[in-house]
Amino acid sequence: MRVVALSGKRFAGKDTLAGEVVAQAAARGALVELFAFAAESKRMFAAWQAARGVEVSLAGLLADRAYKELWRPQLTEFTVAALREDPLVFCRAVADRMAAARGLTVVTDLRLRSEVIHLRSRFELWVVRVTRPNALREASGWRYTPGVDDHSIETELDDPGLWDEEFLNDGTRAQLGSRVAGRVMGWLGPCGTAPGADGPQAQ
Image 1 (spheres, rainbow, N blue to C red):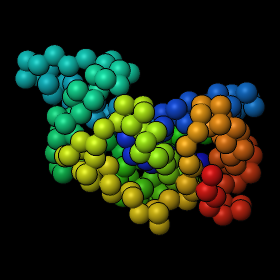
Image 2 (spheres, rainbow, N blue to C red; image 1 turned 90 degrees about the vertical axis):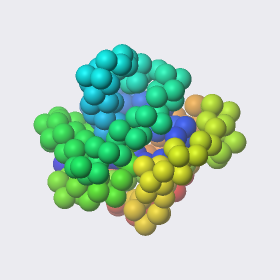
Image 3 (cartoon, rainbow, N blue to C red; image 1 turned 120 degrees about the horizontal axis):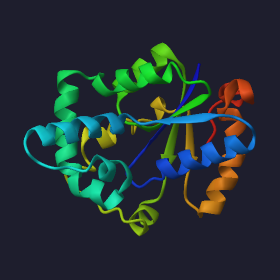
C-alpha cells in the first residue's frame, strides 16, 4: 500500500501542498485521504486539559493557525511527554486507520525518525520533504521561536538521507499547483508512475 508522507518546517506549506494533491488527484478520478499525527496529539491534549479544568478548543487547534500557535509551546511539551512514554502512541493509531484506507494516503506531518521506521515497516512509504525559504515563511507569519523551532520535533528529519524527494515551495499558489501537476501521478503509485521509477527528484 502506497503512503506519501510530507515532512517540513513550520509554515513550509505542507497542508497547502496536501490540499493541492487532493484536488488534482480528484480531477484525475483518484481518491486521496489525508492523515495527521498532530491531530491525534491535539485530541489527547484537549482532553488532558479538560480533565484539568482548562478549556481548549479542539476545533481551534485543528483549523485555526493563530490559535494553534498560541498553544504550541504547551502542546509541544505535552506531545514530547507522551512520545517519551510511548514513541509510537500517535503514529500507531493513525497507521491503523491508514491501513483501512481505500485510496492513496498522505500523511501531512511526518516529524520523527520513529515514524519513518514504523511506516516503512507497514507500507510502501515515500517521504517528500517540503522546503520553503525563510523569507517566504516569515511573509506567511512564521517567526523563529526558541524552544519550538530548535526542538527535536522540528529538526529530527532535517537529514536529507531520510527523504525520498525534496519539493521546493518557493513560489505562488499557482506555481505550487503546476509543480504538483508534474508529480501527482507519480505519487499515486499504481494509479500512475511509481515514485521511485526515476529516483528521488527535487523540484
